[in-house]
Each structure stands twice: as structure tokens, then as C-alpha cells.
Length: 335
Image (cartoon, rainbow, N blue to C red; front, side, top):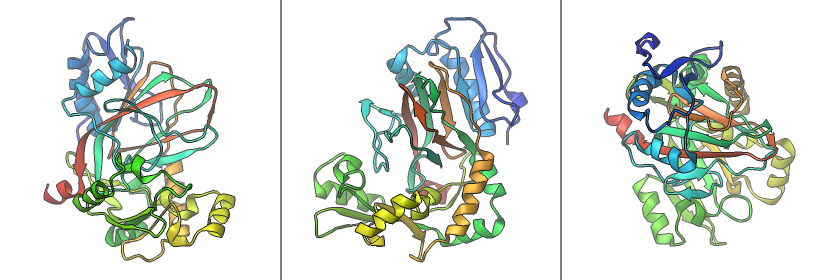
């Protein structure tokens, strides 16, 4: 692993930890006002390339971002095409090519820590968040180092999850979850079937015309650059035990367990133990780093090394997202 001391300062910016609780995230600020984020790209990109493998995330604060268009140009400047939100698990709006709203869940709901699309075998390596408008109350984007999460989860749980793998089962639409045309960006079932074949996803059309998918995925992944193991899954989020008790009971009154909007099992289809998932949730809670957004902030994360979340909020809030550098479990297997 690289040393943070390698991140030498240039004449235009300062770099320091945002909090006293660790290196995630590193705060990068300009030494004078009105500095354009894009104008400083070359030096910022060199800094970030050294920092991310160590600290997993950087917060760029105090720069002139020039709105959503400037944010998009900044994210695209790292050299990888911005990705679409394929096989997404939450509702989002496409604001521009490669730019999406943050998850459009009601403001009172908490979104647990997760690595983007770690419920799949393909994911973005980089993810950016731009806070165009900070909520007056709440609405933070907590983050956590996925390597530390892995290290602090009991070894027996790590081994059990890693050896057995995870099977994610999703039922789309039906008034309970995101409709499949929105998830796959098409209303053509043949295109859905082709996508599933290409990505190792088993799919079936149910009698009511809705779609069910199953996908065997990793629980742990090794980062291709740092070679460190990361806790990299969304079992704690997809599992039925992650629902509020009243919501869980109401759902199970109207659908069979197999028809839940989403659930997760061990790779062989056997039940995951809620008690183990509760231990995982406890570690995630311990590792969570929380900071208030400031309007104009840009947060860049290595999506394998850092998980992110969202706290409840009140008032107006606008945080947009970009993703890039597609990677997959197949790449990991051959690296």
C-alpha cells in the first residue's frame, strides 16, 4: 500500500484528513478562492491517483465546480466513459449522459452503507457525488473503508460468506419494486434476456408477466490495484431482515418469500442467518464516517475500497452521481 506522505502538495491546493478518525476521506481544498475544478484537473488527478489506494476517498471542497455540467466534465476527464445505471436496484433519474440523481427514496428513510452494484458481478470502480444543494438538516453521505470492514468482521463469518458465495433473488415491478423496463432501460423482453445471458443472470418470466432474476455473486473481493481483500456485497441490505419489522410482516402477508422484491441466500440457496447479518451491520456501524455536506462539494470514491450510505433529511437536497471504469468478477478471476 502506498503511503500518504507520497501525496506532496502543489502550490494550488492543501490536502489533509477531513476528520481525526482516520484517513478517509482526505480533504482537498484550493489555497485561493474561485479556483476552477476543471482548470486544476491535471494536478488534482495526480494527487487523487496517489491518494485513493490509501484512503479510498477524497472530498474536493471550495472549488468552482460550475454546476452539474462542470461536474460531469470533471468526472469524465479521468479517462473512462461515464457509465449508465444498468441493472440498478433503486430508483434514479437520468439527468444527462452518465449523470444520475442520487437514490430517490423518501427523505425520512436511511440507506445503509453499500458499495455500488456489489450485488452484481459487474460494478464501477470509481464513483463521484456532487452536492449541488446541501439539505438544511441531515442528508449526509456516510462512508466506510471496506478493507477495515472486512478485517473487523469475525473470521468465521468472512470464511463462511466467502466460501459459499451469495445468491441474490429479485422480483421486479408488481407495485413493490422498480419495474424491469426501468432497471434494464428497455421494454423489450428479448433485450432483457440477452443482458442476463451476457452477465450470468438467470431470469424467468412469471405468470403475471413480471420478471424474476437470480445471480450468484461474490461476498468478498480482492482489489486489483492494492490486492487487499474488501467486504463487497449487499447481503445486509437485500436480506429480508434488513426491512423494518412492520414492512417485512406486511410484505409476507401478501407475497411468498420467493416473491419478495429482493432477498439474498447463500450460493446454494440455503438461508442466510439473520444473526450473522446483524454482526455485519454492527461492524458497518462502527466503521461509518459521517460529515456534513457543503453545497459545491465533490466526493470521489474508489467503489471497491469505500462504501457509502445516506442519512434521512429534511428540506431541499440535490446530490448527483457519476460512475466510471467498469470492472467485473471475471476481471478479478484473471488478474
